[in-house]
Length: 150
Image (tube, rainbow, N blue to C red):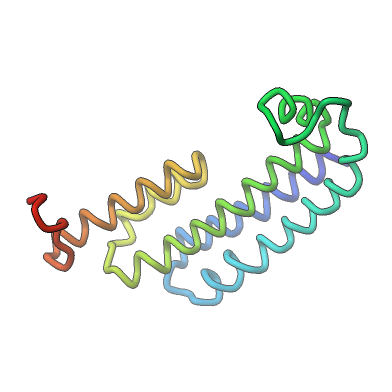
């Protein structure tokens, strides 16, 4: 069953990411499907996994230290919960990046590598997007560096 939930969660996330890359101007895809529906479906899987596997956590596991978190992830259901947590939140961030890029005039082709990085390495993808947004603004002359830095 865990393998099935893994596959379903991954497939849902990929539908959302494909929509962000291929249909970035479709408001329903970006703000409803990728930002709300799919993350909520994945959140349901997360809630199920936590409810059914948290009681299986070994003695000494928890969130207070790296060793405790490592012990939590020895339970396959909790490891999967951690993975689907990332799938839901990274997709949510990706949908925000698409909408934000449009409002800041960032070309979609420049955004695609940021979306890939957000999917693969969440916080690094967000950092890359923010850098691309800033550079894009400078190139257009819309946004200037802070006073005294140029």
